[in-house]
Length: 624
Figure 1: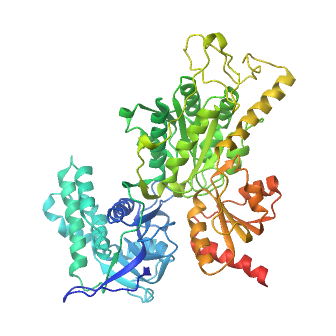
Figure 2 (figure 1 turned 90 degrees about the horizontal axis):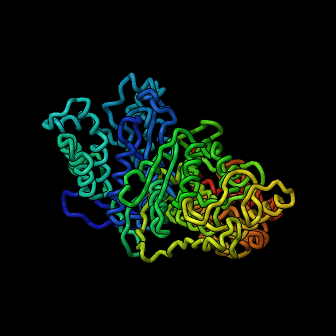
Figure 3 (figure 1 turned 60 degrees about the vertical axis):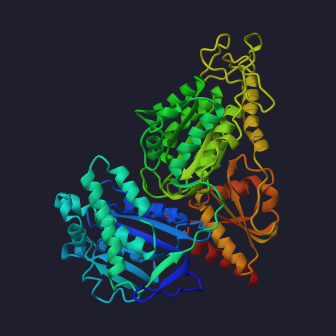
């Protein structure tokens, strides 16, 4: 925990309250223990309390991993504070372990002196064996470096909900709310927003709502009355810009960005996808908003999903699809058809660990080459990447704007860390957002389907409009007129025109900014979800007096005009990415930059400490 300098005096009988600036909590248990729910509700309570937050859910890769096994552990980590929070945190301050496997998996990230809140009811011989413990770590002295609070959470939950009429199996499911209540007490979190959510979520099953509420209050009261805790923590409100906020995940932000874009363009929204982890929640979220003229379609496969999206674009809709790496590979031929027909579509790729099925619930950034270079023929498309869960809204909105203006498919790169993570999002006023201008096609007597405007875009001639009949399809088009053409010189010209159109997108991209000095010894480059860890690391290194700056790339194709100039103003360049060097190769190839890479492919995001150590190593090499 990041502690402040004050400890307000307390009245007799109350535990001392320590004021801190930041803390990290991780709820860990079996995939059926409700850890994601407990973590998300703690996130909501922290947001209501006025703290900045950043979360990291961590799911098992197997759908039904054996209960109590190391491979079946599910966790939810949240970092919250009274100052700006960039990442879910490097080390955990409070680990809530619902069984031995959860303890073993989570303990490696617990800070020295951190709290362990353990559900002793689950530390049976059978569960200890599943977690490969020879003896009970709660009693063996193995945890002497930590502050351990042993609570029989399961049995206390059953006692708290005894009068609700639930079966024992149903009652045991409430233990996540008991644990949540304990942690809410420890950090002085309000229970009201959680109780309101419980009432709304379980309105049709009052007994379940009552049981969860009683378990939550029982856990909170346990913290109040027990002598096991020697201190309680309080955080001041974060200094966030004034406005209305809500917590949302990256996938929710994508859905909201698509809906906002459709409203700004005054067009219906059509979204088609095939279920795939970790992108499926975008479809789930959008399916709730039919009243906003949203049409969702769960296709029979990835290829059909993009084909339907192209058809919707031809019919005049804001058309989008979402997927992850394997699905994006299947969509590539369709995206090439979108390049040839020059229809506006948006493809959201929520990247995950690969290749093949790989690590389907873990994060990675290994689809950059696929997005920029992955299609047959010369078929460039604009590519941008969101940098945080809330930025997924703005990146998606920007993608729709570019797709319509330049009549092209656009790829937005998210990743599992951003998609499942959450943070406060300042709700924008739709009336203050710039409208998305949909150019009107010329009158029928002047209509030429592949005539181009000043940006290189052809008209958006919606199917069924009288007088605007034209041919679409994958065969090469005759310049201006759009009929099928096999002329080699025409193919050269059309290929160059399509490439030039994508290059023109740079006119809508602001010059690249640099955090820190504009020139110097070391420039750290990041893209996508690596933003938070890199920015926090660079900030701390600069506070230590190190000569280091940070350049985070949002647009990856085309890149901002001044990227090459910036790279050559620094003696050394370090590119940090969750792959084996994809952006690094692009920067070295395009700008002849003498850059080196720092790569991680472990299914987990960078920690701040990892980046700081690498920065010190590079600057230390120079000094030596």
